[in-house]
Length: 506
Image (tube, rainbow, N blue to C red; front, side, top):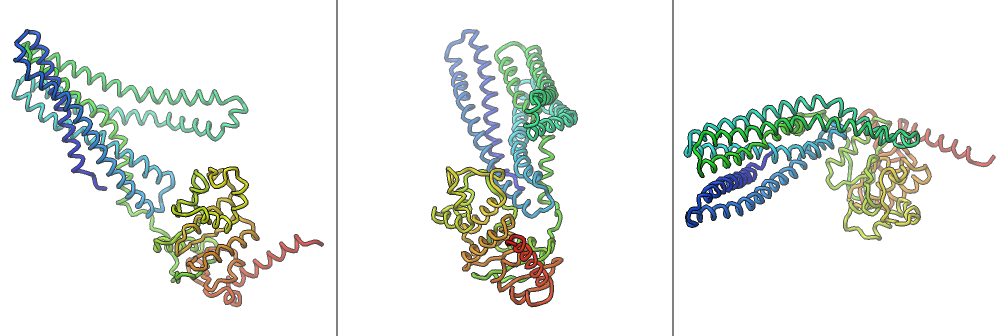
């Protein structure tokens, strides 16, 4: 995880210039107002007037440039980091889906906030403090002492207190957050029951009360720290006005000090935010440093993936069929598969398929739809290919055929199929698979299946058991040899005969 040090340093430098422009503007304006009260010649105020105008324009431009440079640097870095996190997650099989999503989205966003709201403000405050203390030391030892004490309180004491209060608040709201999550789950999953019994308003009121309680607890530390910060600012200005002789210089020092302290006020919020960012940093770093659970070893099988070669992999559950297919997909970047857990996106049917090949034509879409028997279903839909679907609006069979059509549309030289027609009835599934295999006669196909009747034309069938190859050969050769394949074939034929006799007329 590499930070954009050069870009962030440049953004911080611009931010320092913007803050110095703001301090200079306030101090010069204060000096100008107090001096103008004595009605001096206009020529005596001309330089100050020009400085005020220049700094006013510069402050806005520098502030915009700082925001642009800082966000550009951080967003570029986060885009690279998100890709690295995603790649690291692909190598880790011991992380649950929810945790993986949190690391890619929430944790990376937390790192973005950490850079923009913690690291950059702290660096800017440190540089402004050094310059401000140097100027104060030159102008007045009293101003130096007052500014040093005020900055120590605002820049060190208050951020430390804010971090402690944030941690304490997080501990205090754990139970309320869990209770709020329970309320929300009840409202989402039990909405029908709550509506029927008229309990929805009461449950909603409970959720709102819990959310209000959490918000009230979280507001208190911020209000307390903010009040202390304002008190320190007022005290510092009052001390300077009291201890220094009256005049334009004192006014400039007082208001310049007030503006300088404004730079340090975000540090309290940054310290509180840091308590939330640190766990995210630890979780992201763990992806790159912890070895994780080693992947399940795939069976050692040599597969001939030349164009036109069709290979079947069979065996009992847990034999390593899907593991072998996953290993093939990793080792062959050009492979495309229709896996049993393929995802259906919440978008149109057209986009669900066409993302596999963005340059596909309508004829290509219609062709794969006919192959997997989706054409009649599409014709029955009012919007056809433009119908919006998701996993909840289609059946398991439609979902599996969509995924199979997507794999065929990809037009890759290697096609990986893992139980592609498992959710369909036997007759329709066999017909679809036969058409798919015929359509991919010029491509390498690796098929994982438990139905042996689909393999009558296969010349290379690999039988796995316990992660080992126990038989291999053509379908005809394996049916003729004693072993797992012959036993499974006979059992499947027996079941088919019983099913046919049950449905035949007496």
